Image (cartoon, rainbow, N blue to C red; front, side):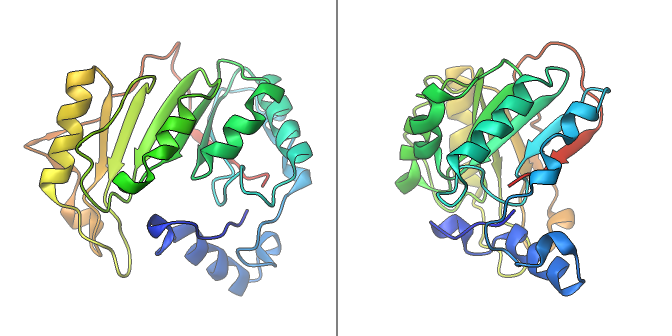
Amino acid sequence: TGCTKISPGCAHCWAERMAWRLQGMGHARYAHGFRVTTHEDLLARPLRWTKPRLVYVSFMGDLFHDEVPEEFIGRVFDVMEHAPQHRFHLLTKRPARLVRLSPRLPWPANVWAGATVEDAAHLHRADHLRRSSAAVKYLVLEPLLGPIDALDLLGIDWLILGGESGPGARSLRIDWVRSVRDQCLAAGVPFSFKQWGGVRRKEMGHELDGRLWTERPAEPGQLGFEGMMDGG
């Protein structure tokens, strides 16, 4: 758990707000607030789950943060390799480190890797991601903070887009969303629109031009309910 801010998309981090809230409630795993902390006791948990799950790894942090030891990252990958019944999602704002470590890590087909890109200035994260060994590579443009009109989708298998929600949420413009959607359609990349966001995100909904966009990459079989593996 835990992270540090590295770009404008981090400004209103929901995970940081939640971590401080949990610390205030006396939750033992958040005794250090949002400082980067590894949780050794959680590593083997997916091995005990027999029913297939969708697992978001380090849901309240970034596994590829510089303060997460390489040895610990290797152990996370070992667990994922030995739990083929689950699909694991790794989402990072630090895909450069992911790529540096990639040759030394096992990359089974059940491990999907994603990078967060909030504006055109951070498209280099997509360049790093496409060099990884992940079976499925996806981009998360959330919160999208500006137009991205020259999106290289070569080697990208899926794109998710969403607006910012919560206190101080920055606005998402419809022309930004349409531009990205149209680029995905032209490239044949599945496009998912998550939300418009805002302070009242439920009222804003998640329709775009009169329909929902929930496209996904093809996957073998149907997974069960979602889980989380917050080992780091």
